[in-house]
Image (cartoon, rainbow, N blue to C red; front, side, top):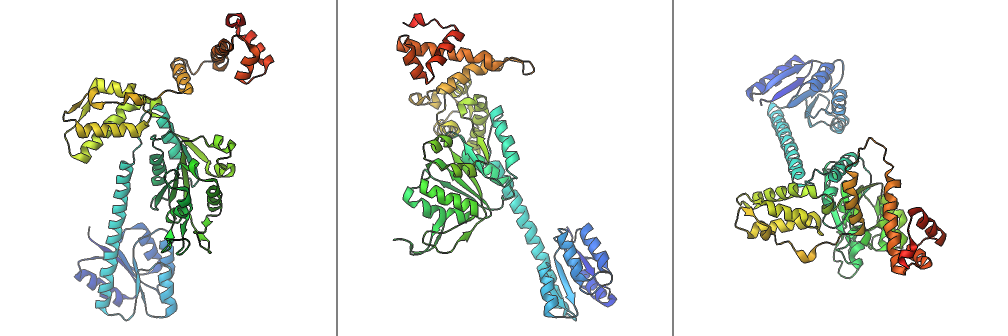
Length: 473
């Protein structure tokens, strides 16, 4: 695209000189003879550069400069001034001028300035384009795959919370994609051009955790040969991801809380506070409320982190996503390794859907990567998968109950009134009380103790549920 330059001056002789210079350089020149017209044109049209006098009718060049910069105009401006005073020069640069030149000027000097300004604009456009492409590439790389309702709920929450500069805590089993979701929040936030710094509390020895998080000064301890920045400092203007926050030592939790609250901290051995501006995203596979009850986690830190909670479902709870995930990983490995397309046989897909995935999505990814590397066949069989049967995940009681209830819940009409709580609860209570009575030989005192309820409550339940105690005596 041909460069267009706006020249703004009320001096006809200056305009003539500038027109001839730009014509020789094969650059289109557009004229404005007062400051008001120059401001309107800069805000309405796209120019590669503007060369503008300070003294003009209607509005002077410095006021125009401030007005267009406040309006978001990115056109580089070269200011011309007949008064080469320090005040004019400083003020022009403060208001965002690219450079200035004093009248009377040498035409060769102005040509150099014009070339520099046009090159500067092109470089900025290239950097902006590269940033856009990098962001798009990063967004493609950071992909949380799935169409199931639990995954869609995660997407919705990420979309709502990403633009808001609040703390987030991500809960989920190992391998469910907690760091992936944290990165999704970061790249969709206003901080996406800042750093994303991850700290895994479970992977760092306790004695090194403080210096890893906050850094240290030279000579702070034996081996501290130089000053080192910590993860918190490195995350300034970006996002600090605290993975497995539940494994952080209690004494360090209090220092972390102070750092989050005040947005400042001290390096190990440091005497001056360091100010930071970092968004905190934490993740854990633990039940932090239980950890608080057991005095393993600070309650005030939990409140500070838990502004928004995102719970990631285990893979066994979203089995309908397994074919989609498998297809995604196979395509990715094909692109990465430059191999011929691979596909799963129907039996292989059935085996994947039947497996309980204790390692969740990470385990699925690793198994498929191994199969793609080792198998020579374009069609991957169930035998190729070699799923580790000995590692079959034993479903928890909650999983078993949820799986049983899911089929029933899916059959009901959500518009109707079903009184599900009152309907389903007795079906859960009756077998529970019956099994404990069986274990105690019908001893109601012992049964109440095992159930953790009052004996009178047990008698009331037995009567309400129609349980025949004599069957267990």
